[in-house]
Length: 179
Ligand code: 5GP
Image (cartoon, rainbow, N blue to C red; front, top):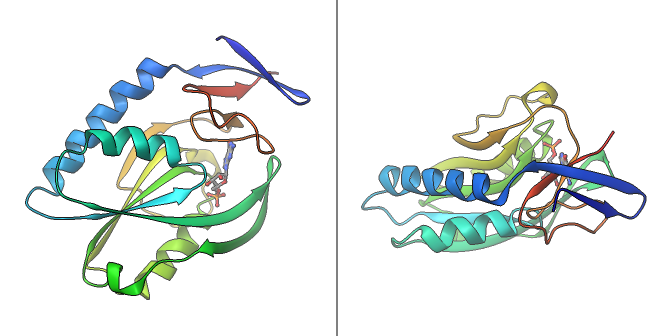
């Protein structure tokens, strides 16, 4: 599909399903190499990263654990600047472990700054951040991303887990707001 309509907004195709899938293969291979002979704990940041995490983890054919956390910071198309943890983590599963955060998109970096600070209190061995998308122009906080799927300009995007006001997460490609 080239364009989709969600509520009052029209979106046009930005990253195709095949572009996304081939990048995910590369990312997974990089992680398999980096964590060879280790048993990392993946933390999937809900809800936006569910599709990215599912595609990536199906290909991660080595021992690992998977945890989920739900962080909320966005309402409509504007960041509320406030982050809540609705689903927390079991300290015992994080302490001393190699953690790989799977996030949908880093925009200002506030969410990941907050989450990484929270994780540090649970004393992991290491923390790596893998973000499907990254908007470098918007970054306001000092956040190190270990692996980025795609760096994108300052666009509002939906699809592949990302929503506009609750809709659009189900599409297998990424769409940008049409002008
Ligand atoms: P940050 O805290 O880095 O400013 O924002 C990160 C969160 O904002 C992401 O996890 C995501 O939920 C949301 N977000 C940022 N940019 C976009 C976007 O272009 N589209 C959608 N749907 N969500 C976004």
